[in-house]
Image (tube, rainbow, N blue to C red; front, side, top):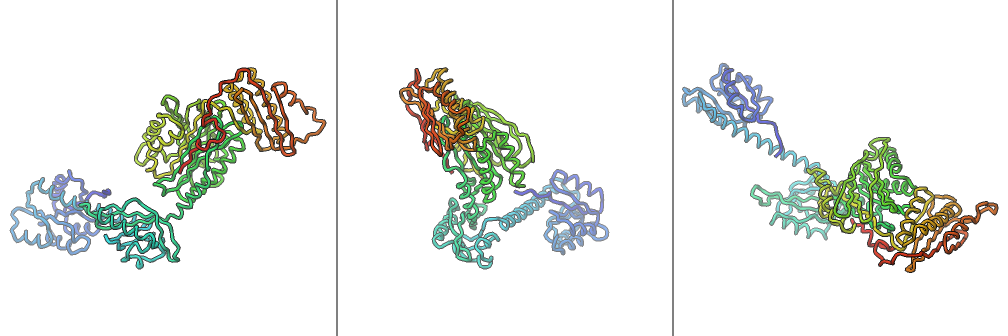
Length: 636
């Protein structure tokens, strides 16, 4: 029940000592006491204030209690206020009858019993409190009904509209006069009417109109408008349906936002050597509240993986459109080769320049597959969770402000070790936050689910179930990334002219060679030869342009390693180039065989070397396949 002010009680007595005594009697009650020392003052009080009950002395000089009561009852504002007369014990019966005739509800003779007086006042005070609470509740319901953004119709048990709100008038293009006293199913498209009739009958009979469903309202121009329809019963104190409430929510904006969100999110996650990915995104409110959540997984040059998880505050088309804009900018910055701090600071500046009033949180991480390091920067986003082998989990706290809150901010990079078999979970607040619940409770559920281990797909499913994601009001986004124990016999990578990409590719190639069974000297020689091929491709093939060079690492069942480097540039060079041919000589000195294929629009370099003691060939796993669509589970 809504809160209201304490009831007021008016004490009317010309003797101050009597009023003090009455105050003491009423002190245990939660009431506000107002005093009046005459009938005239009592009339002034009831003109400006409302009272739960009036304690009125009969014997007063000037205007006595009987006259005062008659005047109080003559005014509309105070006509229904209960009056309890207080009079001396020697009063005759005629005076008592006169008091009741004047409008009194009770009579107490002095000296009165304090417990009796207090109990009588309490009854009227409680009645007044409940009456005002009910009136306030009715007012709140009426205001909510009128201000609701969804169309609403209050109907009788047959579906006859008794009252409609302005939103339904706007949705249908009809005035209240045309909607009231008509069958509510008439506003739906003809093919949708039978289902609404069925739901109305179920709600009227059993009190349950079932789950919301999709239908179409026919507007004035006969254009069908998609709506989500729900039917609930309004019950009496015994639980029996008395009326039906039909709610119709315009689905046009939600559908546009959902389409926009789906179009801007990746169709599938990239296939990255040494990494398994799984992802989930779904709108909140059972699919009715599309917001600004997004995620992205970006294959970065050098065998690295960029991961973005973001959340634009709000719902609908505005949030989804802003999400799409920020996702595109973040992807562009990532592909330019920016480190996590530089990328987030650029995103913060971009967001501030927009003058956006939609708060955005974001987390950007780079997984260096060669070292197993997860470097990330958090801008006001929920903290990542790391699930280790054996069930141990940890929360990586530490975040700067959301994007755009501060024009400039020095964000800090944090590093986590993502050793083989370890899984990182990145998510939005819709997964762990619930109304009326501490954040630690939601994080605890997520940790319990992650501690069970399993594949990234299994961990995503377990986390969604444990956190009851289908009940969330907000969007729910979750990305799971795990470093695999082996890179596999085939690794297809990209290289850009960024120093970080080149260093990462050298380390990743060394790891791959060791897994293939290469001895330390073989690792050294082949990495040096490959590095020369990469440098030549970047310098002579692409002239250090913002493009990528393809790199393939393969080992056959007999232990012969093949490293292939492909660029799409031109090899035209001046004959006077003093370094011409030296790189090829170095590669031939370090590999068993070097082949070079030059073409006007690209070239290919292949290095081959037989390993002395190759590693036993293991059965190919999902993480080792070049093209594995089942590794990237995207749902919504």
